[in-house]
Length: 271
Image (cartoon, rainbow, N blue to C red; front, side, top):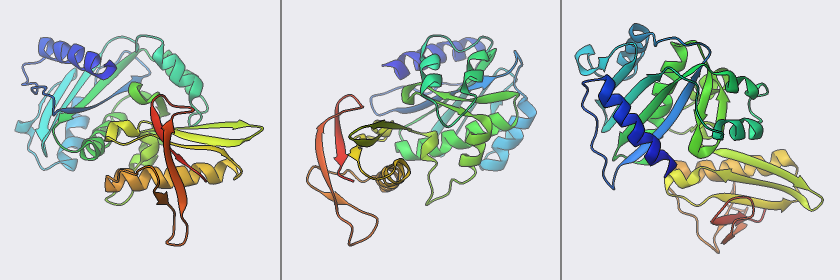
């Protein structure tokens, strides 16, 4: 619901600012949205962003409707909408994401954003394809703006500009930048170490948890990341009673039950 509300608000803003054709939203539409957090109240560098778009997609300048406030184009079954918002990111959700951020040591800087750029990639392609496209356009926006980081509200992710660009640069057909797409949480207690995902539902998959593992936190997180990467890349829907492992010999049991650290049912990996 949060994404839908923001999307419709953004589309209204976009129509009021631009003559560009916005996509029709249907029940089959998938939307990937995020915000680039700006250090200053500063309009976009449209010539630089346009150059980045033309370098990454096989389109011509005439296919892009853009200026220093709004940019839109359609390619590969997806519509890209980019809009400059001359105000800080509203609400308390960003503050919550900052408190849980461990990938950005100085994440509290994000709260000092003076303006932001909303990026929406809309289409009926697979969520994985749209997230790849979103990552490419977001990296371009980061490279050509006085920005500090990226915020994805639905995944409670707030990431520094440097980290985002580094992870995006590793993306290829076999390597996914999952730390840019889902939150990987960690908790430690007397019983052991627990790790969990928050964001795999965006790919139509169940969230994953490892509960009270006797492995080190690094080992548990690495195994969780490996399993999440395997499921997202291959669109693999793991099921209750199955096993998973990093080799043919390794068979780690999977069970489906109510989430411990995440709402709804999650797949527990007995690692």
